Image (cartoon, rainbow, N blue to C red):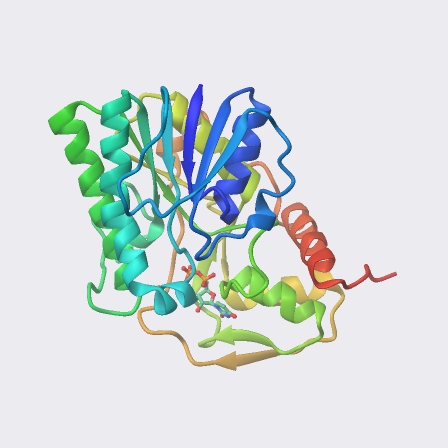
Length: 314
Ligand code: UDP
């Protein structure tokens, strides 16, 4: 296949590029580097990979045929939505429209990176794909949530009106190497704080829950989804739910850190619970996560050690 990945220099985009190249495909990557990092793709020395520095909210031109478009361009951390609220709305709306137009023109399959944020602060638990969500459209997270909800609506409209083959992955909390040190999300924050023996900042009382999936598991689910014929949304995430406080304590232990946990104000509209119901991914894709938390954290901590120049504890 000849595949376009938008947001290729991001955390998930770069792992997708590695996976599709390893599977023998040709990958064209695009990124404008507002939250992506060239270091995430600098290791790729594959003649089947090409990169275009581009903002996909503008008309996208790609020479030659395309079999699939994986639309992963977007800020994805709450601190990024605050810093880039308009870019977040634009890439989810205008960027999705442009990428869908390209899919229609090329006869390509279109896969949208959506998010568990479409469920907002969920009133049903765990979240199934048929739940419509509980989102505050005008809160600080609304720029991301509503952009992705619009992106899903636009994707389904292109499917229904133009017959574009579409896939929608609703990604739950994911972690792994290549998250930024200053990403702002829980796992990269806790790991970099713990490795520097700084205070580990838990927001609120830490009783809110999340379910963390290791990035290679997520990428495997996405590859299976692309190869399937599932048009509507599919949750991909690890159903192992834990409190944020317990994740902070686990990371302090796993890094052998002297850090202590401190409590900071809870951000506005921070969801109280989140756990994917992955029955659909299990039955339609034959997918479920395989990487245990200890293994995933070990890899991720190793990456952050190298990035921060902190030698492994003896
Ligand atoms: N969080 C925290 N300390 C941090 C960063 C995040 O306690 O330094 C909390 C955050 O308030 C949320 C959870 O960890 O309850 C997961 O946050 P993240 O930003 O990783 O993603 P979200 O699931 O909120 O999109």
